Image 1 (cartoon, one colour):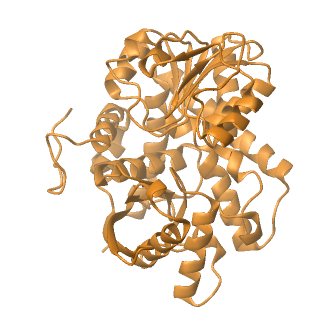
Image 2 (cartoon, rainbow, N blue to C red):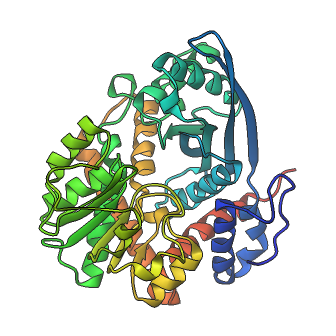
Length: 427
């Protein structure tokens, strides 16, 4: 990696996901022309807030948790990005996720900057009451930098509509008025948008269809392998199955299930709801260990779990034609190179999973106007935006002879830095 002026709060020996993002910026810099004089803007988050989140546990003890909200770049609009509750959350991770949100929002051309938040906690160890207290205290601690025109949180790993409802209510109590637009991914009854829950998975499917057409892969009968069977992987699996593809393998935190003739996705969802994971699904013909998943031959592979899942260690085993990155940052730069050499088409996270933030944008617009669209209208608008974004990225990739990831970064970073340049520096 190019030498960077690193902030004092990161460990230069282990930059984590932020280091992965910096490598991606290094790769795009030669393609930015005169705008490259502004590229350091992309290597420094605009604002980082680290907060202590104390709560009273049900047993009367006091517990403290580490929380973050990072606003990476807001040249094109207010910050936008999810909040994750996970025991392995780090500042490096939240910084990288916020930066990828900057790129993602610019790639699909919605008027947002990038932001992200997180609390270092395993939510499974909390009662519902403790989770609510944690959410409300975290919201109060970051309330001075979020808002409908400042920074709009949304669900991410281990957060959902209920957590967003608590965040919205807490912020509204602090402000003294109902503020539905402060978060997206809310329940429909509180100004949420139809189609939001399925949006990320739907976006993965839409760009998957476009990528398959470019690679000459017919969706009907295509073999699909999915890592992660939650809100992204599960929805994408549904849509590919409905389109006639065969979902031959699914992996989650409990195990890997395989059926070469195609898993019954609807029955698998029922099993997961009852058992808590895919392991033990009776409709599978095989249960594999974790590493064996990457060696399963497929036409389309969808990593939709956590970051840094595809590495230099397992990339050589992968036998697929197309990778659709449903998760954020699932492929390391070293793995990228290995897969590109194998002629695997990778549709990057900053394009493939942008459906969620696109419908979050629709939700935000609907909240401001208090006028709500039908689900058909939302899905049609989402499909059009994702198709247009894929075409724009594909055209850049062909023109510059670069990967789709680098092409997405070229398109997005150009938009961000053009906004930065025309705005100038204040004061």
